[in-house]
Image 1 (cartoon, rainbow, N blue to C red):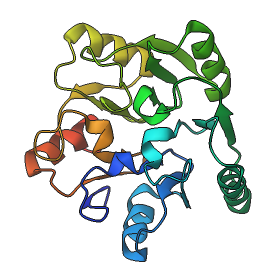
Image 2: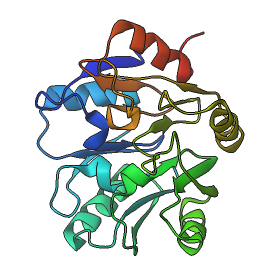
Image 3: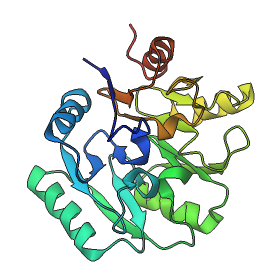
Length: 228
């Protein structure tokens, strides 16, 4: 199965609590084994349970792709050590980089796959260049549907992307050209436009908030490349 509904302690905002890449998933601590098993089964990559700055909202703070994970500079050494140790145990070659910036909500402000990244225009040009070097992909600064929180306003994998329903045709064309995948507009969790906060997705599958409707799931499947 490449798509499943799930909740994290009755919250449908899965993207707030985790980061999914094609190599690993970072997820908040304290989920039950049944839910972790669903994540493993659908996303098909190892899972690392962690906090970031002692917080469970891992998906707000962490961003990345298959090359690197970017965390706030204030992440605790024990958290960085735990993530690096688990990556080593799994034999996964990824950088974990505490990034110095006045901004910290990287999961909200960075949208990335293994081909490119869109970062909020609140990042300076110098910061965008640094992120380009860290993530190993082309980085553009910009907004989606007038929102700086591009990581919340969208989700993109190496198969496809879904963004805020108010994104313009020009933005969609630009995003398709940037990420080199088809990009659609849509919602999750019964009409929530900030789809990045509602689901966890990689090239293998997608886990959506439990309030997501059937029609929304069909659109998500199409957008993320799971409908033949």
